[in-house]
Image 1 (cartoon, rainbow, N blue to C red):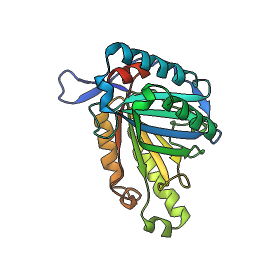
Image 2: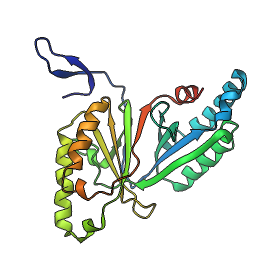
Image 3: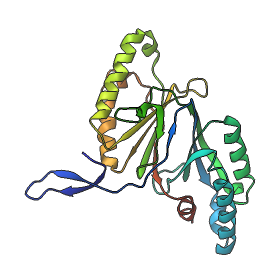
Length: 251
């Protein structure tokens, strides 16, 4: 199966995936980089501004955002129409917590930034145990931003998980990995969050086909490791778009 869009096979009721061309995406070595998912909501007063004012504010915000592209892998997502809590998501991967804070502060000091409110903010760190590639040296790289959709899932384990011997826990995690391998058009990212917040891990899934993510999520829920996850965690559905398209979608 390849990343792409569904089309029907002639003479068959099944579906196949048709490959789509993908633009080259930078691969950056994993050196215990910091990962940040920031979810933002715009104040409804934003929509009351006149078009010229909104355009100027968005351009200022874009200049500040772009000034940090040499410091981070930066990806922008729209949640408009998908979520009632958040409108935007910024995914940042870099080597400095200070720069994450500096960038955020500068964005908030812009005129558009005064209309933004943080809904959720997750920090984690990369390690070698990341489901980012099928083999080779992929586990040592951030290979991100290739797909249209990104599903972000912070999760924690129930207390029973920590009573299981470490070797058994590793085997259970490997089983989850093998389930994910059956969905080659879904890229899974696992980063470690323990110490930053209430979650042990942050898991996110990139794909061009949301239906496949739902099928994978159902299978993972039934694995031994999945049954020991704490339920009720938020799952965000995000559509990758250029920054200005994300801002234009806000009205």
